[in-house]
Each structure stands twice: as C-alpha cells, then as structure tokens.
Image (cartoon, rainbow, N blue to C red):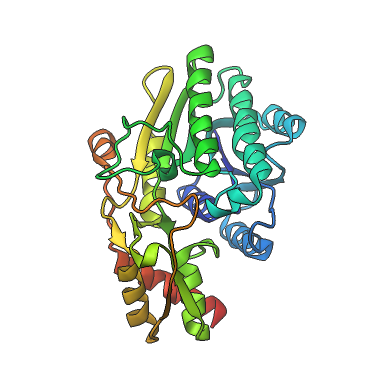
Length: 325
C-alpha cells in the first residue's frame, strides 16, 4: 500500500483524518495553504500535533495553494508513492461566499480541477480519490436529503461551487476512467473545530457574557455530525474503492436534525452559563434545515453515526476549556 495525499490537512476534518491515518501506520502527504479565513495559528497548532504524533518520515507537508496549477502538477509528479487521495481542501463557509466570491471559485472550482488533473495524469498510480462535497448542495427542501435528490438549485455560491466540483468529477471519471467518491458532509463539529461555526461562536460568547446570534429566530435545524464519526466514514469509503471507473456519492451525517436551540441548551448545561439570546432573521444563503439519509453508507460500508450531540459537545467543551481556559 502506498501513500495518501490529504488536501486541507491543516483544516478541521483534514487534521483529524490525517491523525487517524498516521495512527494506523499510513504515510501521509499533507497539503494546505494556511489561508487566513480563520486564525492560521489554529492550523499551525493542528500540524504541530500531527507532526508530534508521527514517526520520522511518516508525515510530509506541502504549503501550497490548490489553485496553483503548476505547483499542484509538480506535487503529483514528485510524490511517486501516492496511490490514494482524500481531497478535503476547500474554501468553506456559506456566509463569507457573499463577501469573497472569487475565493470560492479559486479553491472549489480551479482547485478541484487541479486535483482531478493530478489524479488523471498519475498514469493509473492513484487507485481512488475521495473528495469532499457538502450538504449545502441540496438547497432548501423538506424531509431527509437523499443522494439521488436534485442539487441544481443551490442557495449560496458556496453550494454552487461544490455542486460544480461534483459535476467536474463525474465528467473526469467518465472521460478518463477514474475511480472517485464524493462525500456530502453535514455540519461536522468537535475538538479542533472551526471558529466560524455556531457551536464554537456560542461557547466563546457565552463564556465571555456576550449575546449569541440565533438566525431564523432560533428555528434552524441542523444534522450535527461528530468529527470522529465523519472520519470513520471517510476511512470506510477510502478502504473500499469503486469496483470500476465512475463516481459514487454518499451522505456523511448524523441522520438526526436538531434545533439550534437544543444545542444552546446543551451548551448551557455543559458550561454552567445562561446564554443571552439575540433572535435575528434568516441570513442570505442559509437553509432552514438539513437532514442526512445515510442508508447508502450503512448498506455499502456498514457505517452509522455513533455520537449523540450532547456527548460530542461535551468533548468539544472539554477541549476548548483546556486550550482557551
């Protein structure tokens, strides 16, 4: 078995995945551009933890932007031991896509194309490429989100760029005989998470005595997915590539949408602090609810989420207190 390229390795899910791969003895080639969408010091700290837990020569890091076409081509040419890719690098965040749209097309469209080109020019060395999509591609809908549902009505530019990435991958699989799997992630949370996400923002604000902003008057519902469950799903898919050329699609979610107000109530219990609530209208680009149907993951890989929201938030709060006090 060869090496695994993990793009977005300094990101939240990428760092957790790399740690799991290292723990089972894999050699990991990491790629990240350490951009300033949120504090790069958190990304550096994740890499420091990965490096400390790796054997000599087991982890290599490339500080590279996905949209750097020449740099990406050189990386794939130089890393001759690569046989699998997990492409998690992206510009995330629904709301920021309203302010910095070109950052999203650069990372999520040009960057996706650079990865696909690297895989297809690998002369067959890369047996499987798993790449990240998002629940946002489903747009506004009711009931459980199924992989066969329409995804041509995105509510945000972020969602549109990720849907475009899925379509590009489908075309590359058909044109060049690639084995690809797209994973649509649903609101992943946990230790080492992203500071722009609600559970982190609420924890920080509540501990500081500041109000928390609850959009859609607090009636948002999200399918909160604990990061260890998400990583277990990635590994299950990575270890079982498609039998032949093509692209598969799977949801990675908790399959249990919960109200944002319930998350706030759990945080109040965990932190011992009453939240100061500020109810606000729905934000542009947001959707009122997400809900993952994960029956395909259960059928094909035996994977099911295992972490209730209160347990996962408890682990996050313990990590956050240990790091920030």
